[in-house]
Length: 105
Image 1 (cartoon, rainbow, N blue to C red):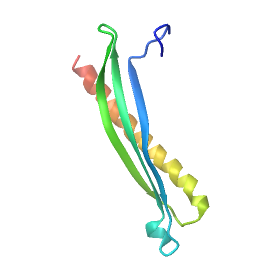
Image 2 (cartoon, rainbow, N blue to C red):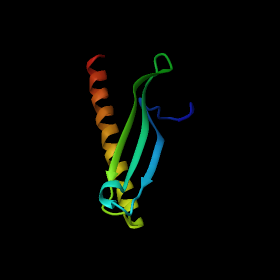
Image 3 (tube, rainbow, N blue to C red):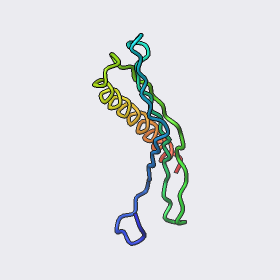
């Protein structure tokens, strides 16, 4: 959002992808075929009275999702589940922090 925007958000959420790995094994696919994803979530509160931001969350989230086999077709559903889980984690923490922040005002 630039300074000429009519809408200035109160909060910003920035996500950075840190890791996105896929592991496969034909020897023991149920135990060693999985995806791992990690992200860094940074949530900032914009304070217009002083034209500054304050950090609410700066946290790394990580998940590991097992794949049913080592077939290539199992990769996309595993990544989909991983990103869905990470999104839930980030927003749960962000929501909790917003409630704490609102109570402290």
